[in-house]
Image 1: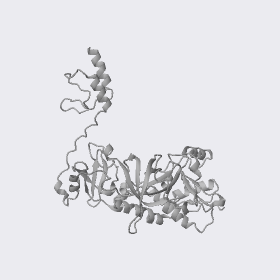
Image 2: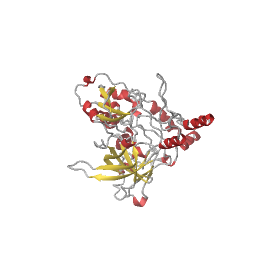
Image 3: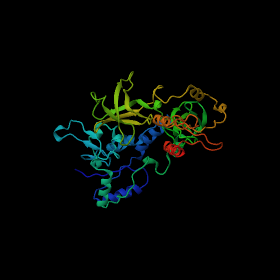
Image 4: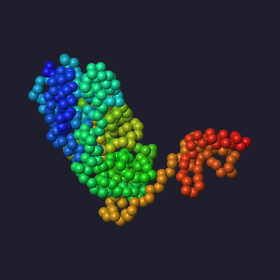
Amino acid sequence: MQKLSAIRLGKGGALQLKRNDIGLQVDVPLEVVHLTNEYWKNVVSYIIEEYRCGRTPNPDVLCNTRIKFGAFMDAISCMKFDYVASGHYANVVHPSAGEMDEDSVLELSQDMVKDQTYFLSHLSQAQLKQLIFPLGCLSKDEVRKLATKFDLLNKQRKDSQGICFLGKLKFSEFIARHIGEKEGIILEAETGDFLGTHRGFWFYTIGQRQGLRLPGGPWYVVEKDIKNNVVFVSRNYFSVDKRRRLFRVGSLKWLNGFPQNQISQLQCKVRHGPGFRNCSLIMEPGAYGHEDVAVVHLSEDDQGLAAGQFAAFYQGRTCLGSGVILESWDDQGFPVCARALEIARMEDKSLLGKPVKIKVKPENPITESDQVDGMELCRGLKHSGISAAKQRMQVSQGEAITRFPVNWLQKFREKWLRIF
C-alpha cells in the first residue's frame, strides 16, 4: 500500500507549512492538492445562490460530498491506494474480503458530541467504500491525550469553528459582499405591526434572534417573504401551538438503498449535535419528472427547521442517508396573520410611516399548581387585596412591573403567621 497524505488549501501557505512539519514528524510524505477553484465553483457559489433564494445551506455537507470526497477523489484517481483516511468522527464498516459486492455502512462514532455522520450523510456508496475514519473509535479527549503523548506539533490546536473559507471575515460581511444589501421591513407575524427595517432577507434564517435590533425581545425570525423582501418576527416562537413536527425533504440520497421496511421506526437529525428525534417517513413519488419527496413526521416538536438545511436519518447506530429540508407548506409554517401578509404585499412601504413603539412583552402566567396553592392559602382572605392567582403586583407609578419571586408563597405564609 502506498502511503499518501494530502490536504486541500483555501489560501495562503501557513497551513501547508504546519501540516508539512507534522508530516515530517511522523514520517509521512505530504503532497498538496489545490482545489480552490473547485471549492468556489461547487460550494461557495452554491451557498451564495441558496441565500439569495432565502434558504440556509449547509457548507460542511457540501464540502464533504463535492470536494473532500468528490473533487479530491477525482484528482487522485490515477494514484494507487487502498483507502483515503480522514479525521472525521465517524465509523465505516466495510464488507469482508469475500463479500466485496456488499455495501459499506456508515455508523456513529464513539464520541456522540463530536460525531460527524450528519456531515457525511449525503455521500454516495461509491465514495463511502473508499474511506476509513481512524478517529471513529476514539473520543476527542482521547485524541488530545494521544497527541500530547506523541508530542505532535498540533496537540494544542483549537477546535475548528465556523465556516472554514471565511477566515476572520464575518459571515454577514461575506454575504454583503456577494449579494449586497436591500432595505426591507420587519413585521410582527401575529399583528402585522411595522417594527423596523432590515438589510435584506438573505441575512436572516428561520429561528434566528441575533441581529434584529428590536427592543422588548427576545424576537425570533419565523417566516420570510422572499418576493417582497419582508421578514416576519415573533416573541412567541416557542409557544406550543406553533411548533413544527411535519416537514418535507428532497434531494434524497440513501447510502444503502431506500429503507423499505423501517420507514416508520427511524431517527432523525436536523442539525449537527448529539440530539435525535424519532420519526417516520411517507414517500411522495415525483410527478412529471420531478424527484421523490419524503414527508417526515417527528415524534417531538422542533423549532429549528430551516429550508436548505439537511435532515439525516438513522436506524440505531447506522446512518441511512439524508436529504435537503424544503420550504414548508402554507399550513405548516409559522402562522402569519392576514394583516401582516397584506402589508408585506404593499408596493409603497413608505406609506407605513414610522415603526410602532414596541411594548414590553407580558410575562408568562404562573402555573396551575401555583394557582391551586395560592387559592388554598388565601381561602377566606377575599378582602385582603392579595390574590395568589395574580401574576404581577401593581406598583407605584413610574416603577417597573416585576414578577412575584419564585418563593413568594412561602414568604407570604411566613408574614401571615407572624400577624396571627
